[in-house]
Amino acid sequence: MTRVLKLTSTLCLLLAFTACDARTDKTDGGGVILSITEFDNFPIGFSANGIANGPGSVSSGDLTITNIPKNPANTSQLMDVEMQSYEVRCTRGDTGTRVPPPYVRGVFGVAPVGGTVDYTGLPLMDLEQITNRPIADLLFENGGHDTETGETRILLNCAIRFFGRTISGDEVETAPGNFALTVTQ
Image (tube, rainbow, N blue to C red):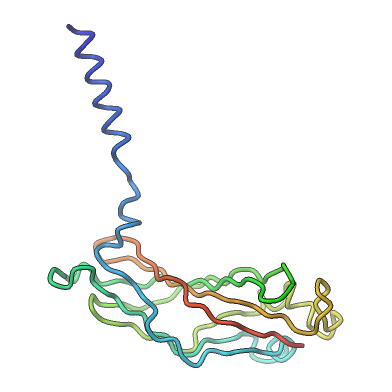
């Protein structure tokens, strides 16, 4: 009888450990969905030499992040989202394969449940991206052309995502907002 009891106890413990998923707070989003709902006046291109010898960064246009409750009839201030960071990642829109390093920065703001938070002029790239390949190849001192493709321009497909946390502690993020950039000499 004690063997049966020990075996049953062991099986119950194993079931309890395998049934629990500590990551549920990262997938349920705290009952809200973050969405990039406005995406205006983004740059369509820039000169690598102009940025490297001028402002040193490429900035966004206007962005609005909306905090949408999954169940609008059941909300609380614990569903407000404190924005924490954003990330810009690029892929190539031409025949090249090299991409600039991801751009990740902190950001402040609160998107109240059922409300929005607005951003204007967020940096999308800075000298870290511009002074590394492939963009650095376009600088005049480096030859002025992409050494991978031989072209004097680089086409980038970029995606920006925002990350935050509800007041109750659940991690949330937006789906990527996509835009294209043409980088010239």
